Length: 133
Image 1 (cartoon, rainbow, N blue to C red):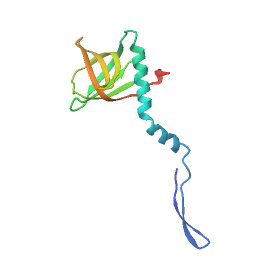
Image 2 (cartoon, rainbow, N blue to C red; image 1 turned 180 degrees about the vertical axis):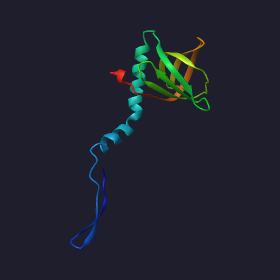
Image 3 (tube, rainbow, N blue to C red; image 1 turned 30 degrees about the vertical axis):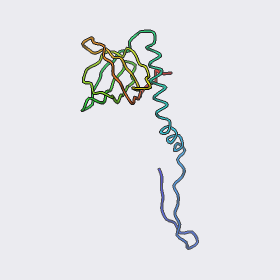
Image 4 (tube, one colour; image 1 turned 120 degrees about the horizontal axis):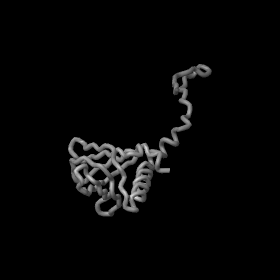
């Protein structure tokens, strides 16, 4: 718990600075390198799919305008995508993930109706991914 206040030292009022937070530097580094962390996690997902298998999606949700897509993967991970083009589908599996210098993340998904859909995302994050190892 941080405390700050005013104390009197020899008749002069002064300010007590709060004690240093030992995790503050770690939090700063985490925020500074969050994009790199999510990039590596997406690359790891892509490597898991490289042999042609699919990654099951337990649930999917579209944002209000269809430009955000959240995928809950069976392993407990959550993939959040900010799409270039709005899509409003429900998805059953992730089939392929690649990076394109022109479009960003290119994700092939299998919809619940069985159609293969390609989504283009300008930003992606993967969280709760203890399975990434």
